[in-house]
Image 1: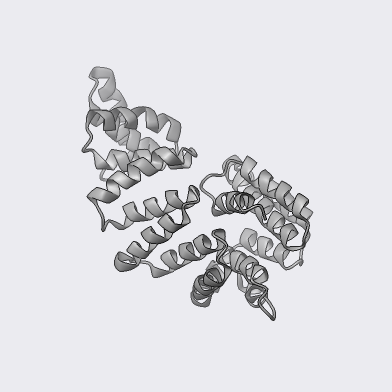
Image 2: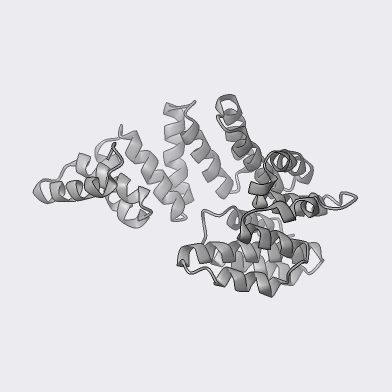
Length: 275
């Protein structure tokens, strides 16, 4: 497993469990399955591994991430908070804690964790972007604009989602002049991200964006794209004053169950604030 030969590790752990029930085999198999994205199967092993050995922090981290990807955020939070107590300066642990707090709409807790990351951060742009999303979700448009503009200034070609949320924050804050998105949309390299931004600027229609989302063949990615499409369409309708249609689209974004997508949480936050 430590050499990165995950398929071999999976086979060995499975064969080992046929011979003898050992927490170590459960830990290896569970962590490999979690890394492969097979979260339900991973939890079967990881829950046994952690229950048997409370000090197995690698398995606890994998279990927390599995919970998070299955939408079981409260259980994930319990794991990440315990790990954060033990490893208060471990970047991956504190970032995971900020992520789960964000998904639970605990924005004050999210900001606290992200500010902790600033002291140990190895990728300032990541922290700044997440702060921007968090401020936006909490309704603090001015601070969201400040953070997301920093991200956009550094890597506009790679930041379609930061650009999209910055555009929404700019309009919500009723800033004068043209949205910053207009100046960067043509430089965005990701075709799907660019399409979302073009829809926000009304360069393509809502139906065209949804059709493009449906064109994605991978079912999980398709649900994620639909979550993004429905969210940005819903947010645009809300800004246009169509509250009923806007909230309906936000609900559709949540119904995709794309828990790991930022737009899923943004839709929950908007609905909770009764925009």
